[in-house]
Image (tube, rainbow, N blue to C red; front, top):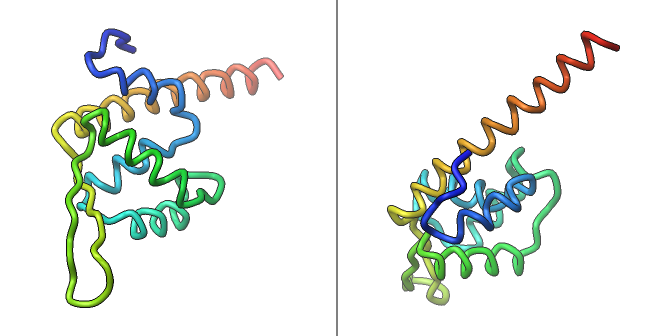
Length: 122
């Protein structure tokens, strides 16, 4: 894996890859821009995260991702209800998602090698 990434967010992603929250947020935003509540619903319904994530955690990560340049946000006003912040993946966010895919792929290979070794020697 490359450790010489430019954006410091990549180090944060690598350190927390097992939790799958940031990769999942990036993936859902890659599919389509969304507001926070929609992301909370998608993440808690997805098979990618093993535990239900509280809204504060989602919004805290979205703020960090925006500070790191991985997402951009804007306020949207609807015909009904209050204004909502919509999040969209940036070009750097797309690079971060590719980085996540590389990390996950590497992790899968390592885990698969472990399981194969265990089966062969068990």
